[in-house]
Amino acid sequence: MTNENVKQALQDLFPAPEPIAEEPVVEAADKNGEEKKTAKKKEEPRENGLVERDHAKHGYDIDVQLDPGELLAAVMIIDKAGFFLESITGVDWIKEDQLEVVYDFSRYDFDTYRIVIRTRTPRSKPKVPTISKIYSGANWHERETHDFFGIKFDGHPHLIPLLLPEDADFHPLLKDFKP
Amino acid sequence: MSGPVIDIQPGETFTLNVGPQHPATHGVLRVKMEMDGEYIIKAETVLGYIHRMHELMGENRAYPQVLPNLSRLDYLGAMGYTHGHVLAIERAAGIEVPERAEYIRAIMVELNRVASHLFWFGAFVMDLGGFTPLMYAIQDREHILDMLEAVTGSRLTYCYFRFGGLYNDVDDDFVDAARAFIPRMRKSLKKYAALVTGNIIFRKRLEDIGPLSAEMCRKYGATGPVARGSGIDFDVRKNEPYSVYPEFDFDVPVYHQCDSMARYKVRMDEMEQSLRIIEQGLDKLPDGPIMPKKKPKLIKPPKGDYYQAVETARGSFGIRLVSDGTKNAYRFKLRSPTYSNMHLFDEACEGMMIMDALAMMGSLDLVIPEIDR
Image 1 (cartoon, each protein chain N blue to C red):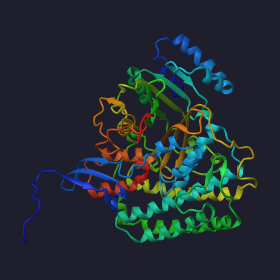
Image 2 (cartoon, rainbow over the protein chains, first blue to last red; image 1 turned 90 degrees about the horizontal axis):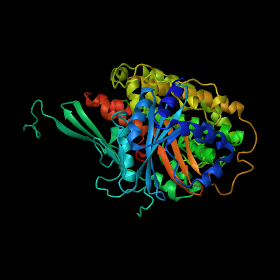
Image 3 (cartoon, rainbow over the protein chains, first blue to last red; image 1 turned 30 degrees about the horizontal axis):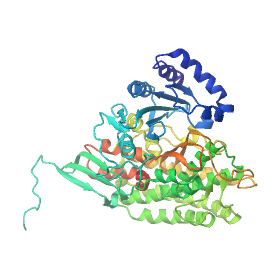
Image 4 (cartoon, rainbow over the protein chains, first blue to last red; image 1 turned 45 degrees about the vertical axis):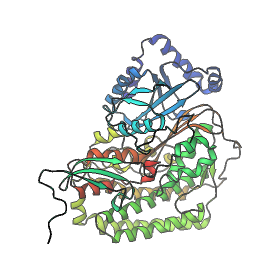
């Protein structure tokens, strides 16, 4: 039940519910058969919105893409519903000149459910608000993502290198990184 | 007698560096502690002393080339991590695994879990000042390592699982040795309970020490025995079943005291549950091939985003794989359980005495290469 409520609350975040509410259903239906075709057709980044995924195939249930500005609202909904923070990471989409930050949330009870929140930020000036005020455990994850991708987490209390040396000025997981 | 070298006034604090080379941290971990006498006011963990960038190696090598990397994360429970890796790639590339291989995998992972918990048990009691249990624990662990070595070819850093199956089939010697090991280990567990669990000094050092509330576990994303010692009934093998775990009858030990003793008890009970799984696995072990008949020569998972979680000896280990349809991963994120479990420590140890904090650190079961990756 909680899962349905969370889904509804996350869906409400998006201003234009009509086209987006239609789209995910269609996409989820033909996901099984025509995944490869749709992936090949659409090379441009997907639009913001909520997509349901097949847990058996992808390992998670809900995939939400949103603007960095909506991030805190979404994370607060998830926190209220009792999810725990699994990990935070980045992905460098160099062709689209964007960096993606991916948040995984999961549940402790038997109602297994994994929510993925992703948000994109321009590569030249990557900046995302911190969620370490909501989830204290995000502190290290965000520092690590800052190490590897150079993404600035706005409002982070202690954004210094965690795994890399303290004087490191490189970001090894960027696709244009040359060792 | 001359006066004290460092003159500290009452109320004055000083900084204490625990590590990076310190026997209590079990690896190169450094904790910067601000101390008021023996009490910790503030602690800051400093990581990265053995950071090797496994995630980048996962990106610039082909999928099979990354196989040995995963066992270098956690040298005590390596089998669980390689299991997560092969499951993630199999899920992404849609490779079927023969039933026999699945059962052997589960048996191996559980044997390795017992070995990991045994070593933790010995080291933990040694942290608290009892040296002898380590000798017993290592003796029992040696039986497991011998069994695993005969089949996998290595004692700690296994590269035994392949995409779709296994590198080597088990023989009758292994099955006999594993069957003989179970009653011996059960006897040892009774011995440990009599020798250690009831010991009054041991109990005084652990009971009501190092409380971690369930809410705190949730905020930090703690999993595994750390969460289960705080009353959270969470085990990936039950909550998000994978491989053949739904076929096995086992319990998830949960304790609600939230203290270091609860985490100790969870691990001791888990060993018994692992033995149950091994026993059932050996009984049910089907005949058949250990590699699938049809397997792609070159592994190229279709474009997409995949997540796979497994329960290792230390908690929920996750792999996020972003594939762009080539023979290399586009993004290879490793979510290590101890990373989240260790993150708790900074907040939890505030106001504790240093010896209690070190006892709590031991109860978190740290393996540093796995935090640093």
